[in-house]
Image (cartoon, rainbow, N blue to C red):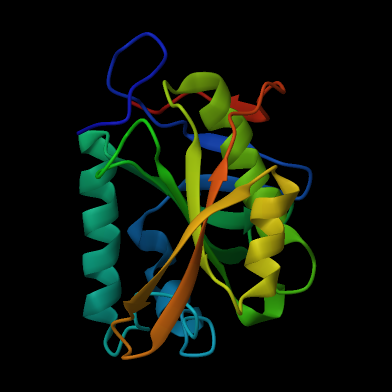
Length: 196
């Protein structure tokens, strides 16, 4: 099942989205080393996936992200500093299980924490997706102990619609609060057309 543009066609992701301080660019292998170094156990403490043990796992993640982008099921971005190009983390919109209610996901490297960059990244993706995609709402699951991520959902008007427990691939029992975020009506941030 693919994400659909409001025209009904399978979505074509943008080549770049810009917020005030960050830019979202499609995931690529150029970020492999930084992802491998920065997607640490501290970052994944309240997340489902584990940190990679070998860089080959990072390449597999990137290649799968590119395949999903091409298929129109998921849009995975690298988050970079808009001015310097410094890699900050990753965020995405995942529609494979329910493209009318796609799911946001995000992580930032430790040195980027505490500056509201995650909020800016998700707000940027949320605004573009609300304007471009045929969706009813967005889903944002987050562990209840991850207060910074919960604030992102609440800042965007998210309301808790349920809770569930899952065991992460690290063996940690996660206590997820599932937020539903409404579609925004604000104009989207600057978006570059997709590259062919």
